[in-house]
Every structure is written in structure tokens, then in C-alpha cells.
Image (cartoon, rainbow, N blue to C red):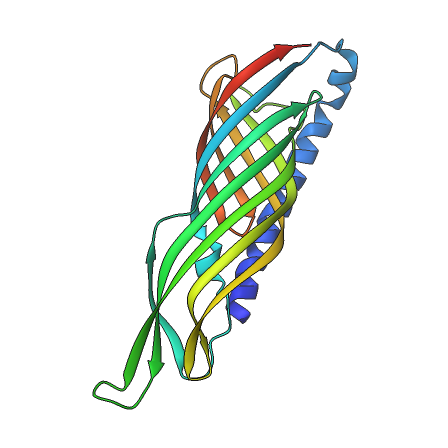
Length: 223
């Protein structure tokens, strides 16, 4: 448990550091922004797809292992997220997301027998939905098309497990949990007009610590 706590603490420190750097950089260009005349923005709907790395559901167990049980191995695909984003104002956007994470965890129980162990496979399926607000600080990294952003919101997950160890047996379990979402990242504008972009983020959303994906603008309407 101490290792899990330390991992979560490192993640939160990294997110706070990114938040601080974004705030400082945004403040340095605040005076220039006031001097410039405001231009009309466009309403844009964007669809994004990302793959997660450092799956937090495998790093931080979804249940406490009773005495005599441990996890021998975990196999499966990486978590995936689909996000629809709609601009709100000059530097903000609201987003709705759906994510899925599925993997098999092989549980090993100390048990009298030929090899002193018996095994159970726990198939874990996590479906999640969430809403968030995305803030784009008022700056772009010089000489690049990188645009930093900060994201905060909430998500609701349906977690289904086929073999949760309880005492000397394993049972089917389904539960619903709510989580806070906090991320910091940057998008790279592949097309000059912002029609397509690649992005990377880091933070906490119950799916993965890091995400790498691609987004495309479906509709752009001038105000």
C-alpha cells in the first residue's frame, strides 16, 4: 500500500508542476493579450481517440487480497478513450468521454496439493463515462505548434470482475465508482488551421496515467 501511495503522490506532484508552469507562462503574456484587440472565435467540435499507458487499474489493485492470495500475472490490452470536445469561449472547452479497460489477472492462492498453489483467472472489464472542462492557457510554445492544456472533471465507472477473492473462494462482483479527473497535456497541431492534432497528457482519470492520441475537428462554425 505504501508503494501505491508513493506512486500516486509522484503523479500528483507532476500534475501540480505542469499546472504551475502553465500558469507562469500564461501570466507572462497576459499584458500583451490585453493590448491586442479581441477577435471572434469559432465554435469547433472535435473528436479524439487515445491509448493509455501505465494502466492505473493494474498498478493500484481494485481490491485487497486476503491472506494467502497474490497476483501472479496480468495480461490484456491497453485502455482506450474516445472524447468529444466543444469549444466554449476563447480558451475553454467542455468534453464528454467514454473509456474502456479490460484485462485478465491470474490469482494464485496458497493451497495444499502437488504444487501448493491453485489458480483463478479474474477477468476485469471497466466501462467509464465522464465530463470535463478543458482550459487552454493564453500561449503557444514558440516556434512550434504545441498548445498546452489543463483538464478537470468527473467520471463514473462500471467495474465488473469475475473472480474477486474473498476468504477461501472467489466471487463475481460488479460495482459503480465515481472518480475525479485531473490532467495536464499538450496538443500538436498537425494542420495549420487546427483541423487535426496529436496530443499527449498525464494525470489521473482511473484509466491510465499517460495518454497518447489523435483528434480531428468535425465542424467549425464562425461566430
